Image (spheres, rainbow over the protein chains, first blue to last red):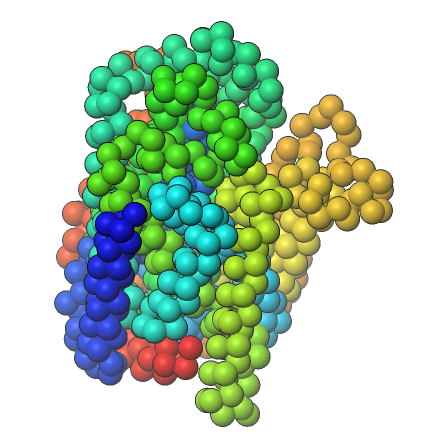
Length: 538
Length: 58
């Protein structure tokens, strides 16, 4: 344990130093622009990747993959194709140019200025302020679970220690010049996952042998007996779930679509595009971004399922059964796997990987929340700078406290709390923001009314579906129970209670945006559109 | 192949690698494209100045 703590402290010192270096080098804007041109695109890509991929993806969804199998690789595919390629090429370049044309600095300000709507700006900021802590908590839970397993300490103590690290990082330099420290963290994550992949496959005798062992495991009578308890439709870790089954709906609608599509409208990622110096930097960042995501979620979703073979050989039960025997859910699988089957030195390195992944994501999340409050929700030109600054900081402080409380409470509510709360936030973002964000970038004639109606319908239907239909949330929220006397109003025996809100609400918000867009006459003045789109599509 | 028998799992393995390769190829082909012109640089600098102020206030 002493060695692990020393490694963490050394690591944190390096991150702190790099953060300071980045801040010092970017003190004035012309320096930043000149220096910015020297920022290697690899730094940009790794920093974006480190923000994108968090402990939630590695620990949370890696554990879910141990439960549901390699069908989760569809999420990896969407992460690379939508989250990197489409996001950078078709969203990133326009976002950067348009953001600079309008002098927008936050996601809410971006869409608010584009649609000339204070309501859109404030309402979207409110969504970020209220719901992003759920996702931030998910990331915190992932990291704390890992610290708990590695240092063999109580979860609450782990969470407390990690909260202190985060608080220091966020308030002292974490937000300024984070590019270098994020890139350093990204590099560690990349190398750590590569070693993990190689050792897991070689430990099972190679790629083909490992897959064959995993396939054979499903046919084992002990496992077959265990699977009677699982949701129907699971066909093995190397197979897609039976089509139309409950497992298929959970995997496809909640995990693959919910998170895979939701990433396109993540406020903390969208703002990253605006900080890039030119389209050239974005082009150059794409290769590293693609490979980075492949190495992160790809490895997590391969190692997760394969961990079942390891657990079964040592303990005579699957990974999920082992996690349950610890009194936990799927979130405990990856930490337990590394603890039991990887050499100690590697677990220590991986501990740093996990802390790195958590810190880079969480700092940008708090940054997004802080600016949402200070710049979008309560910003006033009449207030002086100090008052606006105070508001940002109070907002961030409130968000930090709420996040820590959620990180304490959520694991007691949901066994797989990391995956659920991540999916929940991604789903709300996609349903509320994706249609109007695409509209802002590509449709010059889209009206303010269409954007507002689309956002409101997406958000409201998301909320209603969670409160009354989607069993995972409605059971916990209890509103359906209070009004109708049952956990969900979905007819019993149907798969409706398992359809993720994103399927309903994103579809609805797209339709509403299109229909209102077609019937509303409002057009923006030519100057506004010209200003927004200046330099785009040349 | 590789001990995978389910067609869709096999396909997704290929798609994951293919999409990462697409990113690599796109990046290499467009390595030097997308530089800013003078006017854009000016706007970028203005944006950067404002961003600095905001960063300092958070």
